[in-house]
Amino acid sequence: MKKVAIVGSGISALACAVALKEEGVDFTVIEKDRAAGGKLLTEKVDGFVVEAGPDSFLPEKPWTLDLIRKVGLEDQLLATNEERKGTYIYSQGRLHRLPEGVMLMVPTMFMPLARSRLISLPGKIRMGMEAFIPGKANGSDESLAGFVTRRLGRECLEKIAEPLVAGIHTSDPQDMSVQAVFPRFLEMERKSGSLIRAMVKAMKKGTPATQSRKLTYFMSLKEGMQQLVDRCVAFVGEERVRTSCEVTEVRPAPVGYELLAGSERMVFDAVVLATPAYVTQGVLGRMAPALADRLSPIAWSSTATISLAFAAPHVQAHLPGFGFIVPRVEARRINAASWSSIKWSFRAPPGSLLIRSFVGGGQNGELVSRDDKDLVRIVREELREIAGITGEPLFTRVHRWTGSMPRYTVGHLDRVGAVDDALEPYPGLALTGCSYRGIGIGDCVRSGFEAARKIGAFLQGRGNP
Image (cartoon, one colour):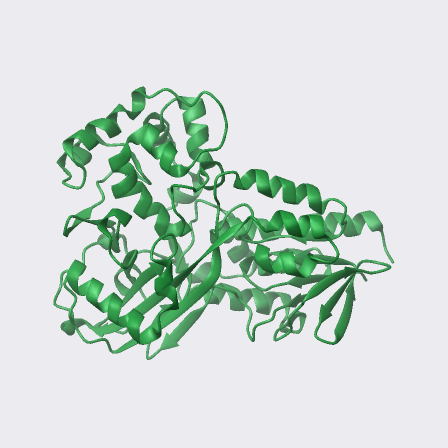
């Protein structure tokens, strides 16, 4: 039987492994760290469920739900506590609720925006004029900052779009590719001539995922997102997942490819590289220098999550909604904070509170290198000044993700297309993961499924050994 190597064990790799298992393809997942899962890491501390990385996924992108169904985790789906729903934006010394009807950055209801003190009167008028702004004449890529300013105005960019997007993509909108990050907006502009008109129409129509009463805009799992990793590993078989093994080079073999890991040599018929682009570049440098060169322009940023647990009586402040985000123009040191145990059930014992704060990414990236004590001090100062939280934490946890988030800068899809072209001379080699066509969990799962389809088609084309 032909055998496939999957290098890396993040959710893209595991989705690929699940799909190959379903097709009856033999494979081994090879991971340099001691455990599988990549950024999907959950820590259990004294009854608290602390997410080190992503705490949720978007059911609007159906691939994560597909994976959850494949591995039998549907009964563990967790919706947000909608009675506390709300996003707040810190601006000019206070927290403002994001006006009802603002979808991402697009207003769909007049009165909530008119009553909001977040946006000035001229800013509101400029946002409302979006329906009369002509579309872009050509289809060239542009920055998200340029796109939002052109359609909705500078104030919408600075106070709504930038903090909302930065919290997810950890990038600077000034060079973020709108084609790569928000192709839906370009399609709306092309088809409807207006984001507002298109968004109102889409809201009326809804989507199959969001129409379900059991699904909320964000979804998680009862025991944390690592639960998906653990179930994927159990589904494919722990014997197929090899950890503490770092692949340093891929070479051509008489049949297939040879993988080097220390002094060990392993030969596989096909290889899936589910590693960050800069790691993939190093692994392929000798065998495929042109391909490696085309991976180098993909930029990366670093982030950190700082979690603080409290006894609820020690937190005297009112904590609105699910948390808050901070625009860059406010010059604060944190990007956002989430009231984890308010947003989700099963995250803290009764009478306790769990808060997650975020630093780094597109702004203040240097903070990620501070030591744990300093980062906790900074976060506590920011939470006190922004939200009035003064209590002494029961414990804190700092999780750093150095060089972990790709930045889809203007021209990103062209660069990825060039990578695809350079990959063509290497049959049986596939690249997957957040480096290429989407950083969210759903996009990564889709990428893993697509890699499995590509490898399956290749193996079938070569026939039986």
